[in-house]
Length: 356
Ligand code: NAD
Image (tube, rainbow, N blue to C red; front, side, top):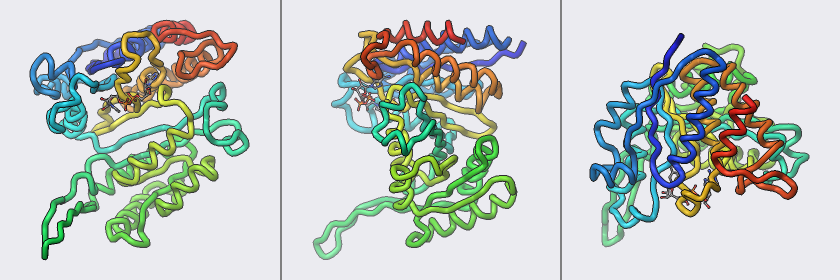
């Protein structure tokens, strides 16, 4: 029987509660699909600061590197808010992504049939379902480029630099095309090639890599138009491929189309399909320990792990189907509607296991 080693970074706030439910679901899935999982826990964020004085202890990086995949809850909270930026729990988050070489961020924006009414977009625009995947470059571009401040003739200025190399664009483009070839075979590369030189290099490189994927239809769109089209006609998109800064903004926009922050999963991939999986929401300190947290984003992150790192897509599908069914039977408080049974975080985890 195949055994996978998973490192759990439960983090702070609701992190431990939601990760516990996701582990329960992964164990049940393993039983059903005949594989086994061993877990190792490591510290990240506020919990790590309290125990070791550092948001990202080196032992955590080593444990993550020694595993097949990482499942992260969330980090941060008011207890650590007064620390300087580079010592806060969130610094651990950026640190672990860098240390593990996670260069591709996958953010699905999916609307479950049962939750259509939660979307801020009109039902006639959404249609039966919506399923977009935003592939964002995560370790290059303006967030990592040269930056600085200077003063000339008494006038202070600041600058940040958008720079991409051909190999950086090639590797993220390949992830985008691979993703599209397993989905609806449509890739929209988003840039600002009418203005930015870095975007012109991006566009030319993506087109060249596209020749390796003749079954995928490649289109290009300017980022300002894409922001508009996501609201006007989101169904036109399958996979959106874009740079770090554009992806930061567009993935948040795309995910809000689906209405609830407690439902949204994500993956960050490095070389050889290694990945870190986490819900997109934060540690929700306002509801930690109350049982009100929705564990479905974390459970759906486990489904992504099965699809993109552990290569058991049928197990991923089983979790997604169980989540869709669970939503027709009960809801956590954040997505509750009148007449529907209200359940706690743990009860939702149990329900998904029962429906698997
Ligand atoms: P948040 O996502 O934690 O919470 C925003 C709102 O959504 C809150 O009202 C919260 O109760 C609710 N919410 C979030 N997740 C939920 C869930 N699973 N079920 C039900 N309700 C949920 O964002 P915030 O309040 O801006 O940040 C809180 C802390 O989390 C901060 O310290 C922030 O820096 C950190 N943060 C961490 C991550 C991460 O670990 N990836 C991401 C964002 C924010």
